[in-house]
Image (cartoon, rainbow, N blue to C red; front, side, top):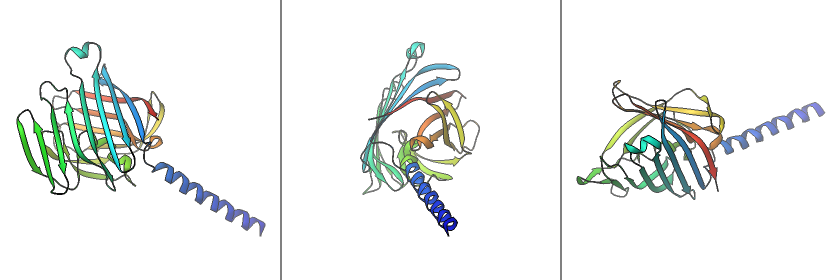
Length: 238
């Protein structure tokens, strides 16, 4: 009897522990989180990235900055992005997005009208209104979408706007990995954009299990093959 009772208690303990760990793993990020990144182009350090996420489990504000450093500041601009919106079952649902600092492409903004399913884009070339699909987001929120979902998807199809256009992108989950970063070894879920041609722009991101699936690494490859990579250097909450 005592052995059976002890075994049952052990099973109960393990079950409760599993539920606790699961709830911790899928909890939303802290209400105020700041992530800093080292930004490199190939082997050259070109700047610093700062992302600030604020939310109350209903609405969110996300600001993202890329600040060139050293020689890179002579040919690169400081880019600032901001996204504001709601938190829904699918993750983050933006209402407004903006980007400033890009001298070549100019400032841009996007307004999401979810009632009438319309997206309004404003660029230096004028204003344009496009049909808005239910699975749409902006360039800033893309790596943060899964931080507020109950389960990581194996594949994801979502329309993304950079303020100039709205385009469908598909992402495939890769094998989990462990990254060595400035904040230590981090177990990550890895997502990569599905491309049709080798010359297509590529994008992939790594989400930390230990940090509520916030992005800790991002990699972008342009049509010329230039690789820009951002790797986390700190994660702070308040």
